[in-house]
Structures are given as structure tokens and as C-alpha cells.
Image 1 (cartoon, rainbow over the protein chains, first blue to last red):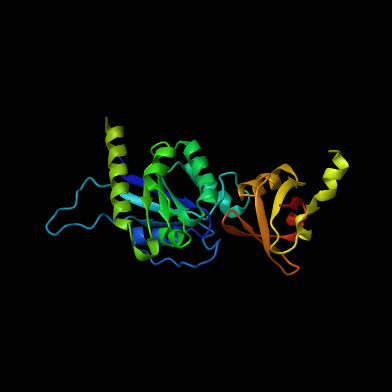
Image 2 (tube, rainbow over the protein chains, first blue to last red):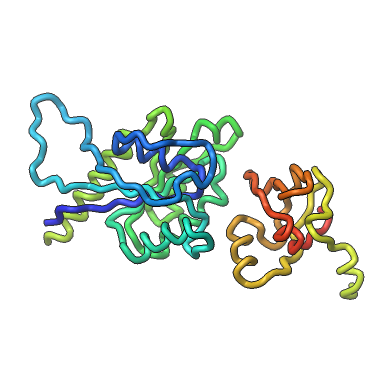
Length: 185
Length: 82
């Protein structure tokens, strides 16, 4: 039985990692619209999915820690912030990595995604800023992208408006539950 | 085409005109910087343009994103008019 689960949030600079982090943890970490705002990793605890009235919280639910890593363009560290992100993924080996991708800038963002896939860590891809992408005339087919990434789950999000957050939260818990089960067997 | 005439159409990015589409021909830098610029989307053959050049760092439009680049790095990037 695993009691402590670590999830890492990674992505290019200025794609909305901290917004996703705040939405998942309920934290009120400062969010700014410029790259390089997060220079060190910050942690928070994932809130369980909205509990229905009268429903007991499962006692077996592990504590899930979310780490908000500084933005990085690749895992081959060039700057100090990138080294923080790289070391965490490659050496600390989180149970799950959530890769936040700017849907309006997908070509450059997916470079990091492929590098993360190569490390073999369990991955969820979050397509953020779908609204901005559509305003630019970019439409991303999440299902197709998922298929092309070797069936990596892909969730569409507009994090600053909270759209898609419940889907992401449910997917995280489902993935963690699966992992816990697999390890128990 | 001889090497000389090929060289003659290549010029450092710092000399590119604002708004003029250029194509990346060569990065004259070490392995580390070349790798870095490649990761940022500046791959051989990619077309892009200079958005701003006010004497300091250059602002580029590369692959649907903006990228600020110091003059030192920019001078190591050889381009041709696209």
C-alpha cells in the first residue's frame, strides 16, 4: 500500500502550470503572465474529487503531493531552473507526471512531451489554453493526439476558467488507483 | 554551386531586416548552444522573422511563438532570405 504519491507538473515556461497547480491544490500561489516566474519547485496537496453529501471519504486514499516545477523547454538542462525540473523527473521519479501543453503553441511544446515519454514515467498530457488556440484558428484533436502519443491520456483545459479541471482530477485519481492496485498484486 | 557563392548569401541574423522572412542556414556555435537553440525551435531550414530589433536583444517570431534572443547568440545564427 502506497501512502505517499508524488505528482510533478511540468511544461514549457508560461503555459499555465501554476494556474493548474492552484486549481488542483486550492493554493493561492502567485501566477504571473511571464515566463520564468516559478524558479523553484513548490508543493501542495491534491484535494480529493468533490465529495458527494453523505459519502464517506475512502480511508485508503493516499496523500497526493503535487510539485509545481519551473518551466523547461527540454530535459537536457541548460539553465538552473531547467535543472531543477530535469533532476526531479529523472532522479526523484514521480509516480505521475502532468505535462501542461500550450495548445496554441503545440509544436514547440510537444518536444518536451516526447522527452518525458522517453523517460518512461506515467504521463498525463494537459492541453491548456484551448480558448486562445481556437482564437488563433488552431484546433487540436485531443483523441488523435492521445493516440499518436502512444495512448497517453490527453485532457483539454482552460485552467484559468476552471474548464476541464474535474475531468483532470478524476483522471489523476483513476491513474493513481490503478497504479496502487497494480503494485498490490 | 561553389562554397563561396553559397556563403555570400548567408548573413548573421543580427543583420536581418525587421519583418523580412528568413530561413535558418547554419548555427555557428558550440554543441551546447546549438542544441539549445534547436530545442527552442530554431532548427536548420526553419523560416522565421525578426519582430523587433532596437539594438538590444532581438524578438523573433518562430513557429507560432515569440522568442527573445541576445545579440551574441543571434550573431551566431546564419540565415538567408526566405
